[in-house]
Image (tube, rainbow, N blue to C red; front, side, top):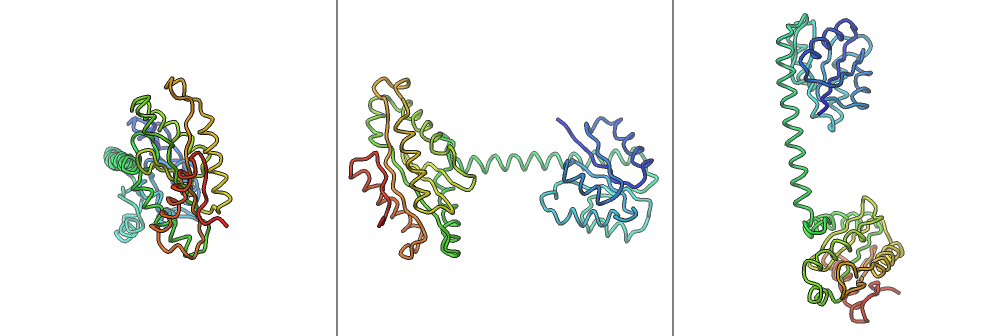
Length: 308
């Protein structure tokens, strides 16, 4: 694993000395250098390091200014800053720590002390990275349907609340597709539940293809799916629905079940703005009623709610 350090100091001699000490430890595979705070900030943005060693007193753009810039970028909060300064001034030390530095070492520094402090802060940073990655993984798992890899019902409802409120507040377009696999019970009866699960994953893959990052495709339950399309009017929703309807209908499934060649879906669409829709429950019911109508009219079709 590659670990990197950024050394910010206006003295090339000091930078080289710090680098020589750290190279001997084997802690870092990559070294970045900058001669003042502004260049250091740009270097941090270009190649975010695992640790920053920064001098305080530099001409033009000093360490305090660097710390203030870094502090304004919360996405870089996890990078520890170790101050190395020749000024043994308690006020400077306090100010540096208040501006966001984690620790400081006085020049001329003791090599063993510098290495010990670097090791300590690097270890904390790596542990925090590991914890953050674990939390992100747990969050993904809590929001994801384990079979299809789509978002789950819980995540869909949380997102729907936010997008519905935004649509109402700013009078923005929002469309909801509710879909159901036609005669899925007979698929399970003919081909078995394992094959039924394979078909669910195939349909999930088709549904999430070509969606934008802001779109939400979720497994609503059983053989039901939903797609939430922010900033999309009814015509855009119909376009997405037609694509999904056709691609699923044209999918040859005979290789996974000899008794089944193709499968179809039914889709109901509801769209905002609509002054008659006051709640998310009403919005869902509108799409669900359109889905029921699609099934009632013969399945394998799209029905748009309240289409004029």
